[in-house]
Amino acid sequence: MSEETAISGEPAMSEPRRLLVALAGAEDPALVVELAGVLGPGGPTLDIRLLHVVDSGPRALLPIGLGTRRGPWPKPPERSIQHRLTDAEDEGATALLVAWHDRFAAGLPGATITTEVRRGQPEQEIIAAAKTFRANAVVLAARPRTGPAEPGPRSLGHVARFVVDHAPVPVLLIRRSA
Amino acid sequence: MAAISGLTSAAPLATVIFLVTIGLVIARPRGLTEARAALLGAGVMVVAGLVPPGAAASNVVGHWNVLLFFVGLTGAAAVAERSGLFDAVAGTSARLSGGRPRRLLVAVVMAGAIVAALLSNDAAALLLTPVVYVLVARFGLEPLPYVLACTFVADTASLALPVSNPVNVIVSDRLGISAVGLVPVLLPAAIAAVIALLGCLLVIYRHQLPATSPIVPAVDSWASWSGVPRPLLAAFGAAVTVFAIASVLDLPLGPAMTAAWLLLLAVERRCGSKIGPLEGIGWSLLVFVAGMGILVDGLSSAGVTAWLASLVLGPVRDVPAAVMVVSAAAGAVGANLFNNLPAAFVLADAVHGAGLSAASAHAAAIGTIIGADLGPNLTPVGSVATLLWFVLLRQRGMEVSTWSYIRVGLIVTPVTILAALGVGLLLGIPW
Image (cartoon, rainbow over all chains, first blue to last red; front, side, top):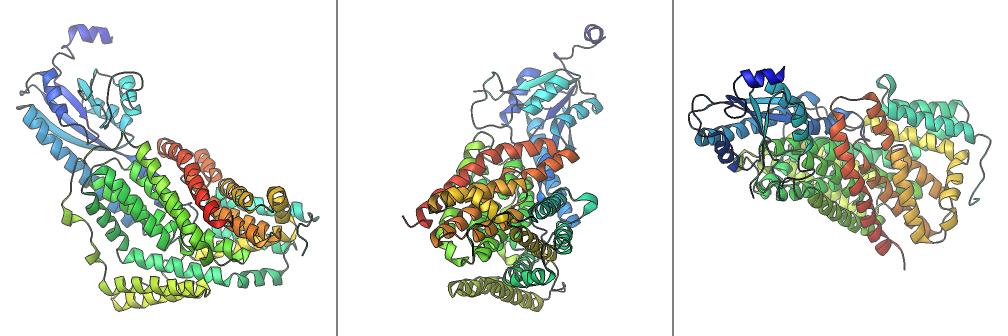
């Protein structure tokens, strides 16, 4: 069935229209240039959705929610703390996406660029977002590492691995150029 | 006093009561709190005739110093939290880091170490970690390394002073050793352990921390010290001084800590706080400690702790260095089998009943404190037993982060224990 769409439908990789770009935040800004190199110039046919997922894991690890640590200690009023955590997450996510929005707008002029924040497990949320956005392709960038990011065994983190395994559409993986 | 007494016929019953109580503390069926579980266990010990009611009462009264100490400490931590001290500490870390993730990690570890040393490990873990999370989220960085750093340093730095960890006071109180007298050994040990922790974290996260943070919030957007009322800041200084002087004079730490807390409370009131003075006191910690005291008393009079002491310390009892190493290992294992406070209680009682020489008892105190303070870093919830329970409950969202915690804990825990033990052996044993 998928072969049929690939033959009769629009070519998926050569000119994807709806592109979901998943951003952890600290990726190399050169990502936009590399993407433009693959896609060609921007233009009105390009609809880019920038997605940032606030990973719910670390917050679940915070001792406030766990109840048992060792000390039945003075617990801070939980609701106000949770509000502060959510506000900080929103502030960080918004600032990240604003910065990346500007970079994409400059690197791919004319393209429609929208942003989206989700919360949860990043790999799951990226797949879910690709479905709701009806993306033609998902773009992943190598995680911001200070070391070399050469292709090879174990060069993908668990998030990228999961997305490659589960994405219903082509996945474009952009590694940091040497 | 017989050095090592045999088990009495009450030993099986006492052991069962103790283990069931620990099981309840860990599993918390129907939201049963730790304090109530300990109280229940203590009640059963008394009803079963293992601890006479009079002895139970005098046990609680005998812990007056420890109990007063916790009232003061939890109260002081609550005042610090309300005054915005933790926000100021985090804000200073943010400014010092200049938006560089690696420096921020160092700053978070330092801030956590200072808070843990002065206001206890749980103040750092429960009150500072959420503030650090807020800080890191605003930088647009992945929070996991920083959240873990803060949780780990809370226990790692808690060796430093008597105030840094309830275990420190419980162990020295039980052994009749001056908690302050251990500071010349434990403070350097804590510094070594914190440096070892920092080294581990920098190596583990060497590839994951970007060179610069993706967002650099405006410098003046961070909470600053001017947010903390001036008189209260002065009172904190005064409280630390009062406590330090009392420590040097070898006065009981309980009243000293309570005095420091009352001073803070008075100043907070004058600064216009309307919060009830007893708000934030860890009453349940007091009940838990009192209950544990009675439970361990039951074990002790049944001969269980003495039997444990002969089992664990028997072969090496006259070699202080070996005693220190063995009790550190026992403390770490015990902290993960049960929970660190009960483990510290049992071990301290075992050492106490073993009738060790002064040098061996001193070494055992240092070892037990190192093991019971640093051991819990292996898991995010205080002990392997608690963690297994959480895994059984399949808490949502726990899987990935729990394993990323344990991976780091498996490296950090032995390394920090070895670093602290190295210093302990160097400074704590008359070679």
